[in-house]
Image 1: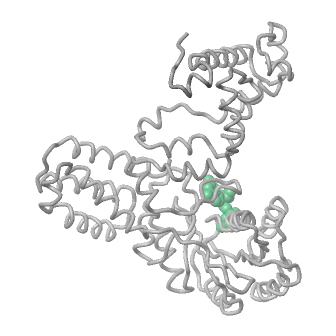
Image 2: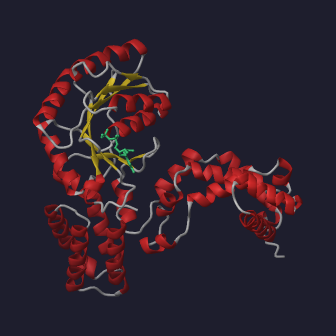
Amino acid sequence: MAFESLASKLQETFKKLRSKGKLTEKDVKEAMKDVKIALLEADVNYKVVKDFINKVNEKAVGQEVLESLTPGQQVIKIVHNELVELMGKTNTHINFASKPPTVIMFVGLQGSGKTTTCGKLAANIKKQGKRPLLVAADVYRPAAIKQLQVLGQNLDVPVFTMGNNINPVDICKNSINEAGRIGSDVIIIDTAGRLHIDDEMMNELKEIKEAVKPHEVLLVVDAMTGQDAVNVAQNFNEQIGIDGLILTKLDGDTRGGAALSIRAVTGKPIKFVGTGEKMDALEPFHPDRLASRILGMGDVLSLIEKAQENYDIKKAEELQEKLLKQQFTLEDFLDQLQQIKRMGPLSQLVEMIPGLSPKQLAGVNINDRDVSKIEAIINSMTKAERKDPSIINGSRRKRIAMGSGTSIQDVNRLLKEFSETKKMMKMFGSADSIKKGKLKLP
Ligand code: GDP
């Protein structure tokens, strides 16, 4: 998890603070010293840390806080608010043009994840019912055009290219006509990056910006590069002028400094974060939710949103009915697993549950491979076996293990767990007795 070490240190500091009934000014100042070190170790910009600590100290050492019934909680609340303030309070969306097409220009250094993120944003926008057009304007990096074409093909999004012998400015200008011709309402331009900032790149970007007058210039930066990402952001903003940022690779073990410093240093908001290589691994950036996650308050809202997007409520109701009537089969179990899998990697889901400290999280042994194994086993069963596992005898177990590429022990374990789950269900008795508030114990 990104921010793991920061979260762990802050939560440790606040646990100490909370355990004291009364707080003195000295207690708070000492805690803030720890917070300062934790932030610096997370690679947050030094000036940003200094301002942050000053602000928290100013608010936290007053009589009102120290003499309140829950001084520790009050201090955490202040830190939470200041973290949110630091990252920009509300999340900001893409500004779509009132008269289409909306032009979105992606800029960023090579390797930051620009091309991948163009694809992710196209997928995201398509989901909203719009018709994006991807534009291949990176004519220098070998295979950049091909990469975008493959992404477009997989997403079923058109890609405009004129090869790599045409001036990128002309390609971008022409893409607007193309969007009109094929009825696209959002143009997403993948411009060329370089390994480092140089004048040639900046001049080209300025020319493209001037030629197509984009509604959004989005800078893609790699969160793993920490303070370099912040410097890159400042540089691009000064030279080109950006509207917002997308911070990629937040799924890695980045210390998080970039996410916490960029807004304060550049004044520009982080609009999305990349949390994986797949096309659906793009999330709107919610400062309040991230602050809650860092301080161990969980992120229930994101969890609910993911569930709403991917979970079939009607099916869930049917399932509940089946559970209560004890008609729950392995087929239903598989269905459940598949729905949960659609919500994203389990490790990321678990992170959003409040109350689990990073240390506890590390101890939670949730593994996507286990889920795939269970899926393979159930898929290797016949319909009759899924409905009534009691018919699965020794030779059937052997066949299922072979078919799913697992072992007989794996099959046994699944069947045992399933039968135990069913036994548990029995404890709840009929739907009727639950409704009446009477639980029937075995
Ligand atoms: P570009 O040179 O800026 O266009 O970068 P690419 O789009 O080719 O991405 C560089 C590498 O970063 C590729 O291997 C991507 O799969 C990977 N990448 C991009 N975004 C993310 C992300 O959010 N998480 C992870 N783990 N990898 C990413």
